[in-house]
Length: 554
Image 1 (spheres, rainbow, N blue to C red):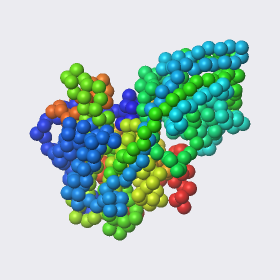
Image 2 (tube, helix red, strand yellow):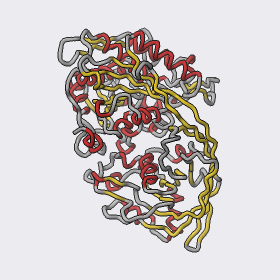
Image 3 (cartoon, one colour):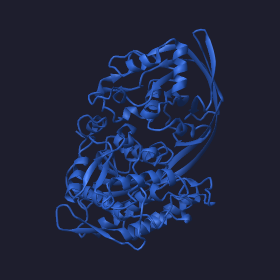
Image 4 (cartoon, rainbow, N blue to C red):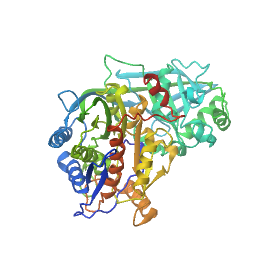
């Protein structure tokens, strides 16, 4: 999972007896046809994907080549067809931009002048590819939350000209600050609270730069996470020949830095922020000018999405898509044992192994699905969901013919649970489908523990949602079948402290995979229902993605 999402996503780690091969059974939807999902097979796939031989599955490396070769071999063995014409691969052109920002940002205005220190007071990067980017005395404008949302009747840019200016923006959305369910979605973050949206909207408004004010609670992570982006490389899609406007600078400032900026502007910081979360708030210029610079080093390369399919028997042009990301971090800093391979067993060999086991289950059915079932393993999730973004912009199955996306990222690894977590509660009818299946299995749906973190917007299904395709994203529960919630929470905390994005996230004897297979069983049943029917799940009223779907599904 990508780096910002990690701090809050309920993932797991726990105990597995290596000899266990418990089988979960699932029933086909409209008939007595039966498919089985096997813990033994699932563990075999996961072990191969998380082995040292795969070298951490980093894009642009020999680890990528080995991973793609393994997937092709296994999907072929299961009898699946190439999902992209005659090929299992979809080329994803990318660009690596290493940004080296200036250590200083100079602020002038209202008779004052002071210097902000890079990394301590602010963090900057760019998506532009020119070698040098200069910001020379550009006007700073406070633009509230930087949101334009027709469904919530909200426009922070109304009457505000930010062309070629630097916008200063609050993190999250007004609902978090107001804490009332009638304001956006209360403390549950919406798409408009995501930092990625804010940068995109600032660019649409013609801003030259966008700076987000960091606060730990509404952001969901500390400023040290943001600081990891200082003076580093970032992967983006290669848009040469199809360029869109990008802000010259994107980044964050600390809360203390924002206080200093508002003081220099002669504005009451607390009062201004409070007004910004009220309807009809009027963002305003601050009378300040910003100067800084960045240098870039740019390299172009190609990675690949992997696509396999089971063609539909009667409606092959319509498809249900299962997704997971194959990539992880490759080689990195060695741990205390000298291990430098970041294997990514839970993140996300669990999801890709799920694609293979689900494909095996579908192929075992005596009657093929009426609609096509597609298994999409995407690249570059860890760097910003770029493989799924490319697929969404260049879909093999048109969005009008894509019934739903069901995404798997960091599956259960500590045993069977009574619950299963549903992210983005209230988004689509797919939630109703999985709720029915969980109830039938004697399980229950649990809401996400930290809805303000906006985890629904932080994995690959999100790019399907942005183009209107209903998307389902679940997380592992913590109500352990035998040991209860305290044990499950303990294992969650252990994962983040001891394993997440570390060489230690590898196959171990104490991983318990039966819970993951139980969760896969529910996802199988939801996909099976759609693959053997004429149903088209819809977005629910209030979803920010409903209008996108309705615009072309008429």
